[in-house]
Image (cartoon, rainbow, N blue to C red; front, side, top):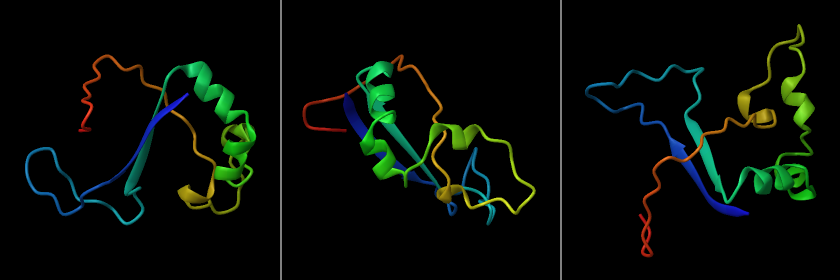
Length: 96
């Protein structure tokens, strides 16, 4: 299964083409994982380690309708995966 994890922090101080200020309510971090296959990811997500890592989160929680109560901060909810298929992967034995 698991191949790699990265946590990226948005640089709100960046200047130049294609940059924009970061709003107070905008997410500042994004995490990504790389798996050998979608099946490997699905197996992990259905297992005990996922529940431990994500506070007992259940996939159905992410799909539930919004309640009329104030929305919880993004980091207090289980993650909702978005899938991308790698079309170009560059790596070296020494790392990036």
